[in-house]
Image (cartoon, rainbow, N blue to C red):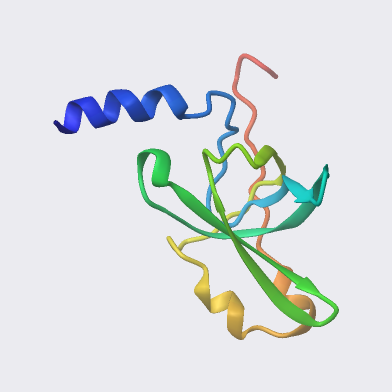
Length: 123
């Protein structure tokens, strides 16, 4: 039974999801439906958590808007999520960044950046 459900879910999973982790700064392009027209809205912020598996996989993005912290949970495989763009890779040592909620001002949006190391063959 579980195998049948997994096979059915695989049909609806997105293929072109970029790899991103906790602490990364991302832009989520989200489709908004208003009355009879649709538009794409951008939500930029830091990924503070990921959870679930399969089609139920979600990620939470946090940003500071007009001095207030705003968090939004996005389903990863939703048709409403048009695309995800990774702006910066973050270097963190936690699985969930809930401690960011307690931070104020400029420090609330800062995470150390991970600098990619070039391989010997690329040098």
